[in-house]
Image (cartoon, rainbow, N blue to C red):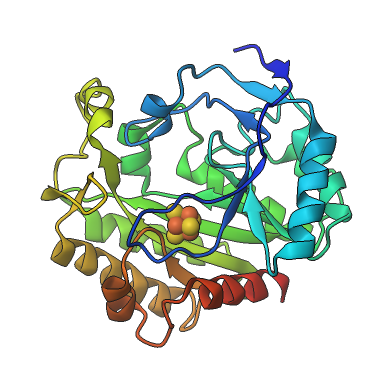
Length: 306
Ligand code: SF4
């Protein structure tokens, strides 16, 4: 798909919308582009965006000015371009990673995260890494990638790209989001953590999110197009934010299982956090972490900048 370039009429820097009643991790988004070439069965963009066609915004100086203002008013900013697009999906046709890294040179106190399901890291590898840049992958077992994450890079390709950016000196982020129930989910996630443990050096992990499958009513029509999808395997209920999610005890089981695998295979104290979960879930999964957005944000920021 050909990229369109146009001016963005609005504000670039925004709070991550999170969910009412969920404990926010204090994250920000800066959408310098929108549209995604991938077709994940669970992806909200499939119903949220009117078109999948990529649009890249040209008023970069405005984004820079907004970052300057945000940097004056806020502390410990963590931000990314991965809300309305995949941060690196169009790297073969655009040089936005280079543009972003140039901008982030001017804001050494702001942590910027490239979030991707691609393996497009060649541009990043040709640039000297900055301390405030994190390159993150959304990861799932290969069995789930094949069925639910269409057109994305395979798990081996993503892990290989992760190994390369780590080797080049970048911090890496990991997102297990969404964690999806299948008949063999325990075995699959156990093997996934094992695979990651063969590649990632625990001290290079900036942060690692855990989020369970969730989707709004309007996405059902999109999901039904994928006959092999396993999204309806676990017991789903409509939650407080009108999104479908796994029943709470099942989410707790998922998080505890994955958390313990990570503790066993990667590190007893990795920078883990939950995405879109409430206080009670936080207390159950991370009893030693205060579910306070400012504290969580500071903890993740410090981990990235260490
Ligand atoms: S917990 Fe997830 S949805 Fe909420 S602010 Fe953080 S990244 Fe955004």
